[in-house]
Image (cartoon, rainbow, N blue to C red; front, side):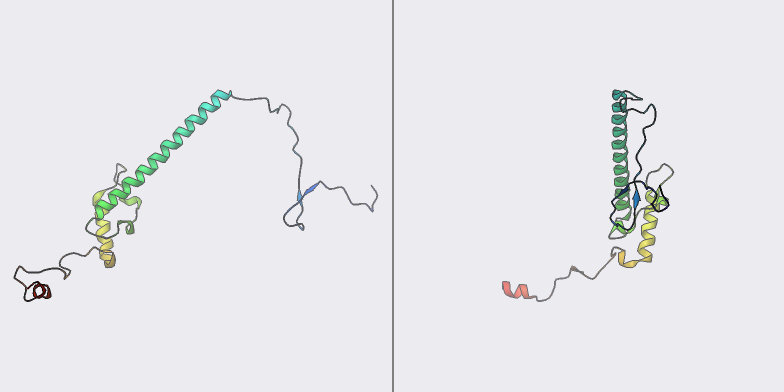
Length: 147
């Protein structure tokens, strides 16, 4: 190589931006590394994969059931207090010592939310609709049409 020639560089792979060169280095095989060698038998690996798949499915089911139990407990605790139980949300403080939802804590949180945000509260008492007395009503349009 003379002083006027450029030094040799490794091959460059094409990139999305041609202004940024990317070096591609060839992998050198390691001694004793051949594709035919296996450290475990195929049956053993397949057994491990099947067990792992079963464990993942059990964990998914457990997560689904835990979420469903929390949702149902929140609905039950919020019944008659707030219109939308989902507005309460779930927090870790609602769990009891046994890991299950604590009804009393959920109910107290729902009442606190209804007090803090009255527009979320379920209407209670007389809302001014419907018949209020057993006394016969006066003359009505429907009675006039029937006669």
